[in-house]
Image (cartoon, rainbow, N blue to C red; front, side, top):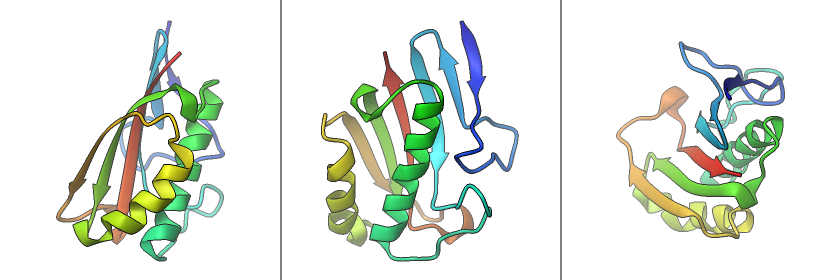
Length: 124
């Protein structure tokens, strides 16, 4: 069964996309930046603070579909500055302990001037 995943515990989509899409036993989560789900405000903090918020948002989307970090098989991470890689990695490593496959690239510009954006694919 395929369905759109939605939760009020994560930021609302600001365009023609969903927070995630569940296709049979696989969830494809849209990229999350450091937005507060309740206020819609952007957390204009350090790379560590923004990474933490991105991960919290990803967690809420996964949870809404009955998934957890242990189900994540692939992450794609976008950094505004590759010089933030070490600090980003320190926060990331605390949550993705199952060591899913990952791409981490520098992007010229992210929405709202974000320093980081994270998307995931998870399988049950």
